[in-house]
Image (cartoon, rainbow over all chains, first blue to last red; front, top):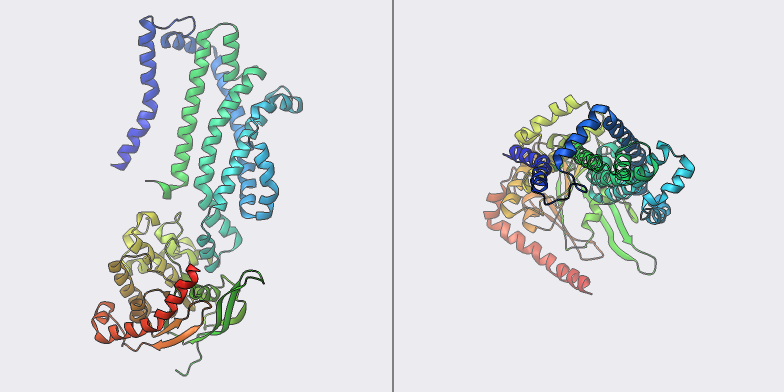
Length: 254
Length: 264
């Protein structure tokens, strides 16, 4: 029964955008929407098909995915590491807490011009701006995950003679993992936003570039292809992280 | 008993806080526990009974005095294992991994751990839950797993910190019976902390009654009901009720003092 319900939930997550598309087409065909600004799904699909056949779409998706994945990893890995150290050591926490608190609220996209000065006009600046938005969220969530661990687990570990590496791998890491993964899920959403923003103004490829350049040349259908592709990318990456959670924290499964 | 005591607690003391506002939690606590003896400590809240246990477990350092545990023949054995109050199990480990935790820490291979733990789980009726996570179990089952974890560690002494406090009356009774059954077959020395006078009488060979803060020993009461005991039958014994009343008389003033301290 439980498995069936989970399957239903997942089917609905995929179905609901499809239903919205059908409604959109109907309203568009009935003439309620000005097709010069908002084209119908069918004409968007046609534009999408053309983009796919020419290989252009794959190029843009590839460019965005590459920046997203590299940026995400470059932010998440050091973020988890720094967050762990901050969570475990109150002195490190006292030193880094004000820095993190000061840097976290800066909208990272505001740093893009500066990053382009430092890392150039190529992929580097986009990767770094994604990494920075992931980094602070991950640090904060990891620190909280470790600090919030119930003291009784450390007592039990000590009482049963747990050596340091085991303490980390069997107690601290699994104990903090649910909070870390929650942080990564939020980070993923934020990094999509930041990436598209960066690609609007400072790229020659990528979904953000596709959307922006299409708007500049008034190819509205192509613009919508970009919007839909980035949406699908968002849905798929969220589903991917959900699967990761199911596998990595089975004790939280209902 | 001619053999030397298993646990020697000598003038143990613990105080907290700065010099100006120092709180003495425990004072001059001296107690010898024989090998294989089951001793319960009862006392009002805040009397430092948990502190005694935590110092014996090596989780806290004393301000004065010492706790010595006589080493056994097998030096590879851990000195003590503690059964914690509720929530002491690791939520991210299955029942079998929780129970085998001490073996894992000693570097026992996964297969052997399983082979050693499964008969024990069978004995306490949890074999078919071995792959469950703690949150999938009832409170009574969880504390059974906690007991199993401590017994599987096979320590020199067992320390228990109100392990059944969070259970309802019926589950408490069942767990007490089961604890006695496992313990009687193990010949372990046990130091057990509880709020329940009836629990202390049913389980122990001697009861240590403590005073309100600063915690000191008020009286030590020997309990000579024959073993093996049945907790349910024991409770129907008129001597049980008389004993409960006399221990309550010893405790009553201390509990009132503790309440006054808490309100002040």
